[in-house]
Length: 421
Image: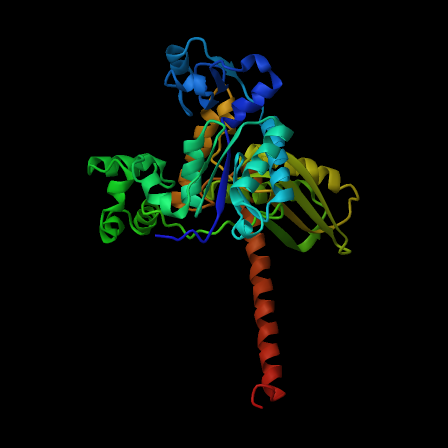
């Protein structure tokens, strides 16, 4: 059991999408609101507590929503507006918090360890919560405890629009009576497996021998067992708007072939967007870089709504490239970077009337996981056989030249006797 040596806060914006919509339209207050595709083929991205009372939940088909709650007010959703409010909350936290981590579009962790020596941790956290509410109008709940797991569970129990502190000595009495569903990392598959074993509460889970948990779930079993016992040493990872994923390519021969440059750009975006989805990340900023043959380097970036969809990011990257490449000089290098990353499953196309696009991406990614990341690609980003052969020849020649250079470098070192002194 951990001691109370750390003080970790978890802030969670309550029914975030719905709350933003209610800021736009006060008539939505107190009514069952559902965010998602408006047609019967759409699905739920978020819903209000009033809608949940009818059994509505995220990812539910909209046709079922209408059967359960005929009076539900269905709103298409505005990811650009939600992204704007998410950044507003982050800016407020960044101004006051010593170390914070943006865990998702509507969640933040803050490490305020040691603050109790100067200013009460609970008092400080309450003041920050009030600042968020007063400056954004959004309801927000927080949990304050000794680690990330317990503070997240506490924030969930504090909802809606509440606050809860769990001191170190109260961790087990607090979490033990709760359902195992409350533990982060326990998804549907693990939940049903544990329930089939007769495990329903965290207390029962905590009493299972750790070696048995490891046999059942591997390394994740050990982590889940520790969480069930109130132990979590995971640090709050300092959030930086510079956190990014990127790729770039230097050409063996400088080029002005606009078709080829666009082809390469699409392939690069497709590659790192797949990496985003694999890591369950979303980006809200795209940067494109061009280096000309005279080594002049120019970059351009654009803030966008949170996404990890190829078709959105490719369009943005092409737009930026078109604005950058106006000199018609030979290009030596192009690069793409996605920054302002947050964790998050892809919900964006739940706002659409048809879920086909989501299924398409899921299918493509499954094929890549099974057969390799190049198993399926957009035609525009794929080299023809002739182009691929030419590229491999150039690459092989460059590799051979590099090998010769390295051999000469080692030979000079030995001849000069520097490695034998």
